[in-house]
Every structure is written in C-alpha cells, then in structure tokens.
Amino acid sequence: MIDVMYFAWVRERIGLPREQVETQAATVAELVAELRTREERYEVAFADLASLRVAVDQELTDFEAPLKGAREVAFFPPMTGG
Image 1 (cartoon, helix red, strand yellow):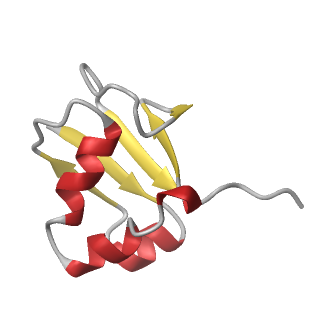
Image 2: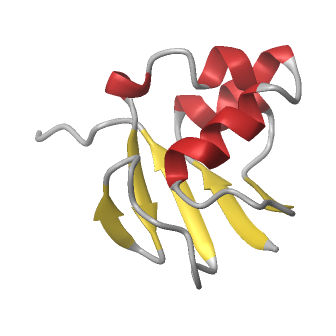
C-alpha cells in the first residue's frame, strides 16, 4: 500500500487530495499507467506527463524512479517563481 497525493490542478481533476493505492508497480511510470486505467478523471489528470512533477518520499524525482520501499508518491505541476 502506498499513499498517493495530488496537488493543485492534479487534485482538482482527480477530485481527491490523497488516497491509498494497492499497487504492484515497480516505477512511478507504472503506477501512473495503473491509475490512468481507473477512470477518465485519472486519464485526464495524467494525459501530459511533461506538465507534471513527481516526488517519492518527499524527494523530487522522475517517472522512472523505483517504488520499492516507497511510502508516498506526490504529483504536482511545476513550481513557478514569483
């Protein structure tokens, strides 16, 4: 079981701030592929991975990052300066 958190417009599209997911995914990309098959709202949220960032256990990483031993994955749009 892994905690999956969604921020900003990702949360708005999926309709949840976080959920626990049972997964056999080995990488973040595999987890995204599993989530996209759930419902259309996930497909829409993950349609353009280039517009998303991901963190595994609060460490910014990429979609090929391994999930073995991970407790948390967070998806969010790129941060902008201001």
